[in-house]
Image 1 (cartoon, rainbow, N blue to C red):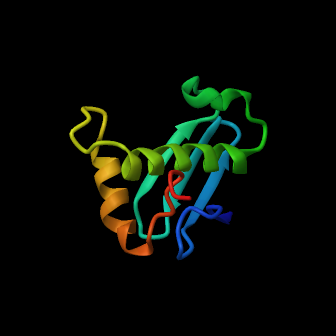
Image 2 (image 1 turned 90 degrees about the vertical axis):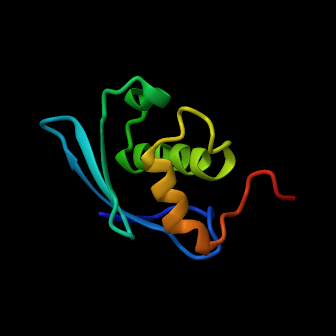
Length: 100
């Protein structure tokens, strides 16, 4: 399934994902090719409480994008994932939650 992340960039960002109900995993890929996965049972961001897989994907993506664009790059939790998101999406013009 393909979704567009809601109003985070001036140009759209799409994520393709697949839900494996048997393994309780979501596998996803950003439109620029980077891939990720997470468990539907993860405690991180209370994902296990979200019944809609689309909402779970959006929450994970929004968290990583916020970290990539809004946090200090010297933060020890700023990982390769965040560098890749920033590097591949910076030309699409991030709409900061701090902009008025």
